[in-house]
Length: 256
Length: 314
Ligand SMILES: Nc1ncnc2c1ncn2[C@@H]1O[C@H](COP(=O)(O)OP(=O)(O)OP(=O)(O)O)[C@@H](O)[C@H]1O
Ligand SMILES: [Mg+2]
Image (cartoon, rainbow over all chains, first blue to last red; front, side, top):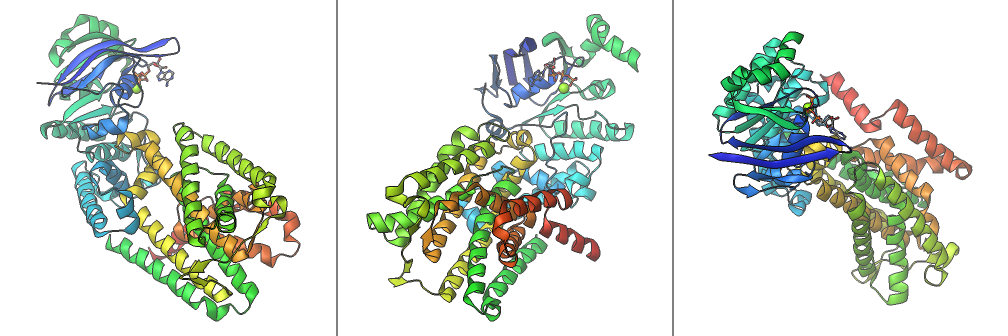
């Protein structure tokens, strides 16, 4: 079943066509990876899908609904959440509060009850706290529950962003280079975490340069180059595609 | 959670005790005058801190909202026969609408446009108050009638002390409720990262407008009460230096700290009274305090102290 359909998606910055007529469809419950060299337009594509920027042209259909151009907070309501390549952690809060923000849409957030501290708000806060603690355990950050986000190491912050995104109760999760900057042990942990998220019924869109991780977790891969789709297919297919290997993977492999 | 709740209730109880014990230590009209002004400033600063400290939006024109509240209470009863309470509420409503009208176009933009817009707004308000002589009395200011509650004129320092004390308590209570609710967390999220807040389902624009309007309304209410208490208002209430004083109180007391707002307001209401010849150097002194705090105690007095105490206990 198709969960996300993207057609003709285009975005230019000045003269640069960062995303240029991109089409693809994502099946529900797949781990769908998007790879490509630096500057290929992967993050721009994620920004378009998550509503942080509006496309110049094209359409995004999420679970049958045209969500093209909707702002980010409304996409979050529709079950789409994300993490960021460059950390966008709330450094003015504790780790747990970061995750609680993710649950915003499910909390008692009406102004007057909050101003008056009504019992409904206190109950909601208690539930949100428990849920956020569960998610901290889920991503393996239980020891940081009471930590200030600003005091946490980089690898933990990567997982904190995922816990925060999961707190929105997403149906589709966009992960932008979750393994960038992680050591091998942390990357292995991230691999397991992504698999577990997918097993729990969340569709995952993954942008990642670590090809071991990509081969390991992906059901489907899209290769982006200069804002265009270079190739697309099952993980095995892509690995066997000489064009891809030549244009992208080969020179990557030599780098290592 | 229970720990946090305990802290919150403990803080409120302490505030209530300090307010209740005040009359034991205040022994002349001058003392009361300072205490009442400090209380009114604290009310403004609590709102302003929600805007600056929590949501990370700067206003350099809150004195304008304060002055509009003050003049609503001066003009509406005198010229249009309003009940003083009706005038206060009307002033608060009009200021809320004005803040909304300013916020809508400005807060869609990211960055420091709000500081610019509020700076301009404050200047315009003080020019209008200065120029509309027939309505405002111009630079000479105007006399303000009594505040009447339940058919009785509120007179005397003690009565005003209790009124302002009660209002400060209620404002603090509500601000604490808000801060420890999804709304308060959303405000902090907007401050931390607008991108991430939006991606987490927080309507960033909505919360920026909400907190701006809320802080403006609190300033207007405090301005109305000030006008009645003082019995006189001048366009100086809207001056840029007054806006800077308010921001300095917030920064000195501590960003995103409700207790800090109260401490900052009290400290910087007292200071000018303690220093002779202060008025000549007002701008310099407040500027120096503002800069000094940002350099030496970037989180402000109360959060710094709280962190020290937590370290000691840990
Ligand atoms: N806000 C922006 N303003 C101007 N140009 C931009 C902006 N965002 C991205 N670009 C440009 O768009 C192109 C695609 O950038 P993007 O960040 O999407 O690439 P990417 O595939 O995520 O790269 P990387 O692997 O390095 O993260 C680049 O040429 C980049 O310079
Ligand atoms: Mg990128």
